[in-house]
Image 1 (cartoon, helix red, strand yellow):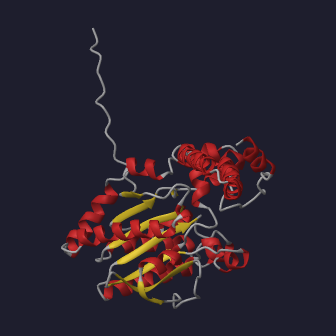
Image 2 (cartoon, helix red, strand yellow):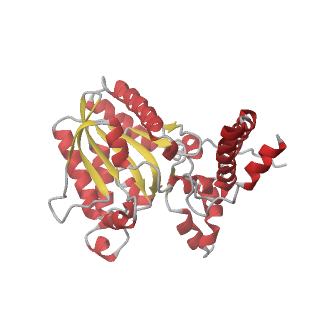
Image 3 (tube, helix red, strand yellow):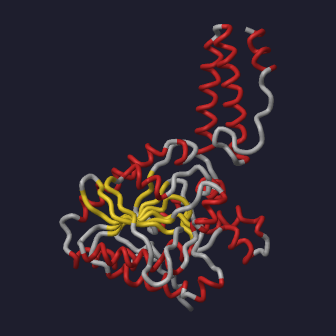
Length: 344
């Protein structure tokens, strides 16, 4: 047995720095190191027939994953929400929908590739889908502007939602953006107006609107397509009025204090569920959605089916009334009555 351990240890060089087995963050380093040890143990066990060591390491690995991923800090969840291997909108579209027909352009300026949409079928039901789309490499990220939409992106989204209302189709929206693009050109073309216009018009649409925050939910960039009847959120996504780095730069003039800002912003799914900002939190596999995209797709499928079952019998007036009440209740809280001390 000791000879086997020696052979394993000799082959266990430190794992390479950077992305290894999908891990990239400091808090994941112990998991990456233990997985490296497990692989070496499996090779040695194949030669020397000692599977009990492999079983022991597998048990340690599972316990370590549960210990780390069930006690993540808000900042660590932000990091997972930004993982480059995390599924994006078009990944979920391919897993959830059939008969997909992409639609492009705002009919005024251009087609914004940071915000995608089109017609599709979900379990035989026709619908319109929308969502922010990031890139997998530098070239694609530049093409998609890192998921930060321009005004034409929000105008395209509104055009497709108007089309959905015309044909009585529900809308499914995936939010994953660090924020709307703040460049000069975007401001010149009316970025703030486009977002505000969308929020007003989405509140008036007489069709069911399902929204899920699948990664980053940053500021007005998220709200520009974020008004609906049901807002779900993946477990390791975040949804906030500002990014942690932006908040830290404003409050402390130090972006390095982003972890403190993430804690203060209450941007995690658990916090937002308690506050009534989101209606549902969808569980992710240990390590994040990128570990098992099909698992998340099945959870999303079940959530969508529940939503359609809930809204199928509702009238347009009932839908609008419920949507109005949902947003009016955000920010409400109970305050105990003040005690009055009698004066003599």
